[in-house]
Image (cartoon, rainbow, N blue to C red; front, top):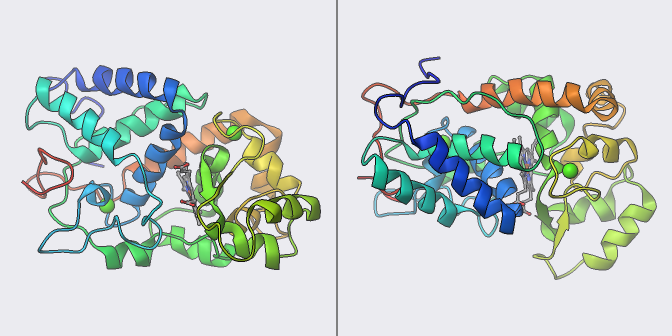
Length: 295
Ligand code: HEM
Ligand SMILES: [Ca+2]
Ligand SMILES: [Ca+2]
């Protein structure tokens, strides 16, 4: 790609240490924020590339992505991104894109929570528009079957391997009742006692916003328990358990469940691939001063 590791070497070498320090101090108090940043980066990259589009508030020229189905009342961490940006702007005004800050903070969050590290390529520019319709079209839903998930990822140039490894991000963070209700009441590929215990917390009607762990074992540690849970039919979302349901993804899930270093290695590769989807470079887009608004 046109991105490079040393992109800010002469214009803002401090950006890496600024983002790292703030990520570390924030996650110490609020570990879930690491999960929320990781998800923001995913939802940015899947909608017209990693261009900070998800960070834009609605305005008079477009309806943005924050109110798309998958993001509304759900995507979080925007204030923290604002904090990163404000601090970077103090040191290097007008130089570092919001899209790059999110990519760096995602890597740093993964590391702080115990996961692998990787070299983040930089030089993405920020979009001057956002699209709720595109977010609704491209962000996968928890109701998806394996074949729907595969084609959703293929549309981004991502393989089955990428799908399985990247879904391992659900080793951290929480999900609302409304996203897993159908799975715990209607599906058969779920451990019955796990389903029952969730049904107590998430009734058929109401309590849409109560949260449960995506990884019931270690929700603030980036490890391979997500895959180990799937082997026991204890995936929280239908789209999670679809990855271990007598189909083409089973062998990958078994591999990552058995060996976390294999998961980490593929997660790193797949994250780099996802982070490099369709960046804006050259004269395209802009370096936003405020991540919520076009300049
Ligand atoms: C494979 C298709 C995927 C589907 C259908 C999906 C769906 C979801 C849903 C429904 C939630 C809960 C949202 C809520 O209740 O508010 C969630 C949370 C999360 N997702 Fe995914 N996801 C997918 C893939 C990914 C990928 C590829 C990543 C990152 C690489 C990711 C990272 C996360 C994280 C970290 C959370 C927790 C966020 C938090 O606690 O704030 N997901 N996902
Ligand atoms: Ca985007
Ligand atoms: Ca975990």
